[in-house]
Image (cartoon, rainbow, N blue to C red; front, side):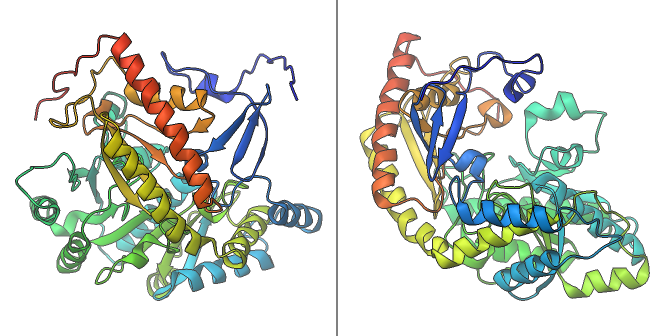
Length: 466
């Protein structure tokens, strides 16, 4: 069905977040399952679950009905003046899914806010324990931990420097173990050990008494292109954090909630249990804004006796959001979607690797479960990147839309660490759906090649000095 719309003076949200040179996004009218439909009736596969959030697909009746029932029963309750059953049910469920030692949950209205909440908690806990010098946060370069001022300040993106310099206190940065563009003479494990050594140097140089926490994604998102570091990396950073008294925070805002084939990406690891886990996106699957901070009982209960945690939020533990999340978790369980993420994710990975082998502009495919990145290169052998002025990830996004496919891309540090897009369909996806995604990606890649040839077709020089 074709529908005509008049745009009001407020404009669409992409006008507020507009970027020069970006093609307009389609006007979507409805969605169902893995599909979205625009004003002209064209169908698109949601190949990235939005920004890796719509984990159970669109228009889920169970979730919609749960939210409606909650809105008609108890639409709002502020945690400082009223309790509600959905809050306790959700936090108990999250603790059960996370497993020991996580027995306390703080709820927020999204990933950025949840990360802020986690860092505020750790800072207040340190001050209450007489460790007020612990204020420095360490994270990776590149990395992304949220869109608030605080979380942007700990994100690793050189292009943010002009914006944040003198405006926000930047955390310390250490190199992420970027294996594809790392030293070709080193194994992934050796590259990881270099990153670990850089972290130890930073902690010692800054003074362990001054370092509050190290924040890291166990599986990377858009900043690193779904980087999956070797397992030794996590065992070693856990050892360092224990040795120097630094909290280890796992950012699972994007990779948590079943996306990697286990409820938490941390569940893939042995010998590394973080002190704090932050989750969001997939726990309410885009139906309502929600984020969560998972902690052991000991620090939460101890801080309650010392000073209490002094920060709350209008929408903390919002009843409708809790109802949505509980229904989403029911869908995960009843439809065995996390197992599907693991099994169908293997098929998706195989499909993408076949594309890599066939396409001269795909340099690398990496990921786990239903979370994959495809890195684009102008020259496969040398790994040479496309010219900076040929924004290949934006071209890829636009070409994918032509083929009825939505992918997710974001250029971190102006593409210094590579150019990639993310393929992360809803966890309801089937192998046949993945084949369709592969077919549309094949056509998209041909479109990118043609666009590059039309623009001159010459690989760019190194964009950044080492």
